Length: 302
View (cartoon, rainbow, N blue to C red):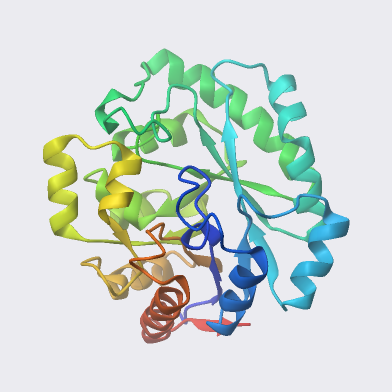
């Protein structure tokens, strides 16, 4: 069976980092969007400099001929009720629904140390089986609510959070209903010592979004040995764009073709923009992914 159709998007975090404001703090949204489109991307995720009023954001994106792909939300379901979380997410959900974003990227950040530069990734919170059960029930309710608005939840397994490893991804998928989609992030899975190909195949019916970043193996080795904080590992250059590290994106594309994936494939590779000029790296990442997914039989739509 022939592979499906994908669209290539990009995350603005390479231009301006919300957790490390010194990285790209003086880069304008206009520069980010102009370079994203010039590099050949069809869409963008939201970021720290994006206005969240759809009446403001919509015309900006249309002017740059970019679709709204998705965007990050820091979840707190472990400490809040479903009703409280629905209230917190409402503004972003309404914007995404109005502008046609198919998914919203959700990650549980209670107990996370991803934004703590003073704490190594090992200091993150870990959940018991009972905590996964409770979290899963609440998350399914939230995802069901989001789906009634036409936006799927794409759960993002993420370094330094409560869902980081393959086992934790499996536990969350087992604890949640089909309304909770999975975002597979090759770079985060690799950093966590996981198997992104196995995750993708095992949870094929739940994969609704894909993030592609590459890993510099020498930096990863140093980060693990020193138990670096997530932010210090970024500053050290652990992440880069596809084609600039050691992840085999031909293999990843073949697995996505095998499971019948169609949708957005997003380059999201946070780096120091002084050391890794965003346009140059965004172009390199898109070219590498376009070639790999084309070889796997996908059609790439604009």
